Length: 132
Image 1 (tube, one colour):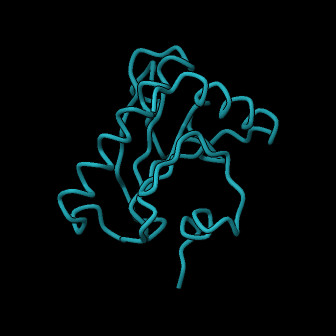
Image 2 (cartoon, rainbow, N blue to C red):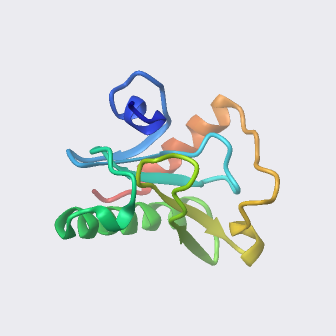
């Protein structure tokens, strides 16, 4: 059964895409911890990050680094944090989160509920800052 992320890749579910290659996709989390929170995924549905072949794993990591650089330019922060949890959706995904405090990466805190317009504005800011 296709995951929600596979449905985003296939265009069945809309997303605020910030970057895309033939193998990877980066889009905004619709309930972010902080504005600029991006999910980076392989387009191929794989459940567990360490089940990825080395080339795909390194490619995903490099793609995430490029996206993180765009996030940092777009959302002033001390660092962009990276988390791989993978329990809620059985499809590899990396969370990239602008951080000024350790608590910005606390997944148990209440999530933001931005409007579609706010998400689109955030996506455009990140896209404009990327050098893909």
